[in-house]
Image (cartoon, rainbow, N blue to C red; front, side):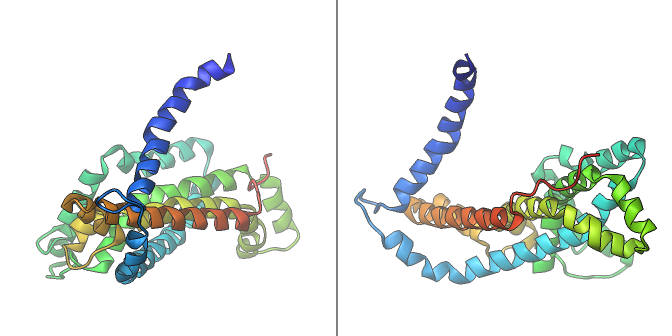
Amino acid sequence: MRSAAAAPHIFWAALFIVVPLLIVIYYAFTSPEGGFSMENIFGLTEYFDIFLLSLELAVIATFVCLLVGYPMAYFIAKAEPSRQKIYMMLLMLPMWTNLLIRTYSIMAILDDGGFLNTLLGTEMHIIGTKGAVIFGMVYDFLPYMVLPIYTCISKINKNMWEAASDLGCSPIRVLTKVILPLSLSGIISGVTMVLVPCISTFYISQKLGGGTFELIGDTIERQFVAGTLNVGAALSFVMMILILISLWVMHKFSDGQEGGIVP
């Protein structure tokens, strides 16, 4: 009975996850003529600088999300339950809008004649810079950092906070010695959920980067649009391997912790 109920989900996963991955692997290890070839993989050295740039911007954006998201998650978790719902709704409200529309709204804000320059009375050129791309990544993916951290902090028994304070810990020491270690698994989950889409994004870099530089997601899209499926598939395959390795490392680093203590 259970297998019958799970059959549609298994079919869906196989059709839209497993099959596309197999197609990518096939094209990655074949030549345009259809024969087996490793040239696609070995020829990716020319894209090494693009890989590094994508990783650099993704790491910076993830760090900024963590720097901004952890205090937000901590503040929401400490709020009254009724206010927590309001704060979470405000946090998720931008996610109700499509990513394309959100990115266009950021363009309207950061453009030379946009809202920010009009408000400040300046003529700063922001679109087309790495800072604009990082800002777009942070804006679009910040909730993915806040949510898992908030979940972990909200599970921590409030008596532990009070016990640490009664034993003489300052609020800073309570945060660093009690709350931070118990929310480590939430931090790792948030870093994973932000880092992976930041590395592979292409629309944000296209619109906010202004075509001045290219990330690995842009390169993959360009290869597929140009019809060089084998090179695009090879790039996608390498990206999949790197992402799987990063997920494995973060899982090992979390050491299977659930995070927090349920009251």
